[in-house]
Length: 398
Ligand code: ADP
Ligand code: MG
Image 1 (cartoon, rainbow, N blue to C red):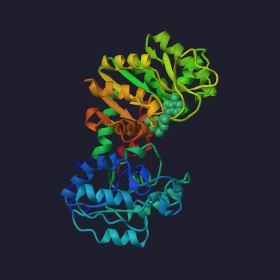
Image 2 (image 1 turned 30 degrees about the vertical axis):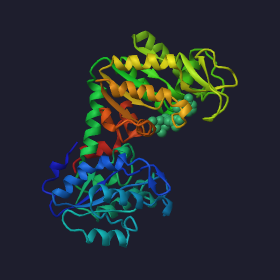
Image 3 (image 1 turned 180 degrees about the vertical axis):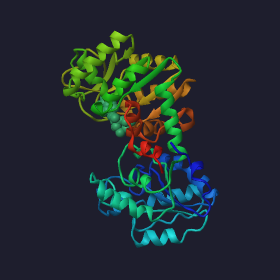
Image 4 (image 1 turned 90 degrees about the vertical axis):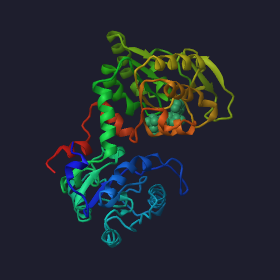
C-alpha cells in the first residue's frame, strides 16, 4: 500500500482526501467526534506541507438524494474548531459550488465537499455510473488520499473508483488501522483473547470462524451469546436469538473443543420481562432463563470470569457491547470488560461503532486502550480475511 510520502511534494497540489466523518448526531450536535479527531494527523500534515486539501465524506444514508438532514455542516464546523481555521463547506458535491470552493483554496487551506452520498453514483452497483462520478471527483484534485478507514470495505466512487483515476495513497489513519489489525491477525502476543458481543450475530459469525484459528480464547457476550446458549441446548426465553444460525454455532462449539481453544460464554445473565431500563431485573443462571424473560446483560459471575481472562491476556480485540449498555440497568457487563481492558497491560483494540461509543459513554478515555478503530464493519471484514476493495486498490499502479 502506498503512503503519502510516495506522492512526492504536495505543496500547491490539490489533495482530494476521503475521510470518515460519519459521526453520531443529536439534532445538529455531534455526540462523538472521535472520527473527526482521528482524521486530524493526516489533514494537518497535508496542510503543513502546503497542499490544498479537499475533503470528501459521507453522513448517514441519504441514498443518492440531496437531503439537508444529512448535511455535513456539523462536521465542517467541528473540523474548523479542531483545526482552528475556517473550513468552508461546498453546497454541492461535484457541482458549481464545489468547483468554486476548491478554486478559492490557497496553499495550506482546507475545504469540505457536501455529503458524497447525495450523488446517486457514489454507492451505485453500476460501475459505469460510479466511474462517471469518480471522474467528476478527479477534476477537483491532483492526487487522492484514502483515509476513511470506516469505508474501505466499500466499492464506492469516493473510496475505490477514484483511486484508479489519480495518483493515490493511504493516509495515516488507514495505515495505522491496517498495521494494528495485521498484527492482531498475523502476529498477536499470546495469550490472545477476542471478546465479541453486540446484536449483529449473523454479521459477526464469519469473523468468529477466522479468529478461532488465531486467538487462544474467544469470549462471547451481549446479544450474540443467546444463539450460543441455544446451541448448547439451553432455553433463552425472549432474548434476541438468530435461530437460523444455531447449527452453525454448534459447529463453532465443536471446533473450539476439538482444537483446544477456550470459548467462554455467560454463566449467568441479567434478565427482565421487557426491553426497558425500568423493568424489574433478576440474575439467573445461563441455563435457567425463564420463558417470559429476556437476557439484557451478562451477570456478575460472568463479569468476573470474562475480566480475569482479559487480565491474563497479552492481546485483546473487542467488538460489541456485553449488554444493552445504553440503559444503565444493563451496562455493568460492558463496564466490567472495559475496566479490565483499561487496567490491563495487553495490547488492546476496540472495534465497532457501538463498542467505541460505549467506552466513551461509560467515561473511559481513548488513551486507556491501545487502539480504538474508527471502522466497525471494515475491521470485521479485515479480520474475516476478506480483501477490502478500498485497500486493494491502493496497491495498484496509481
Ligand atoms: P458494534 O457497533 O460495536 O459492532 P453491534 O452493532 O453489533 O455492536 O451491537 C450493539 C448493540 O447491541 C447495542 O445497541 C446494544 O444495546 C445491543 N445489545 C447488546 N446486548 C444485547 C442484548 N442482550 N439484547 C439486545 N441487544 C443487545
Ligand atoms: Mg453497531
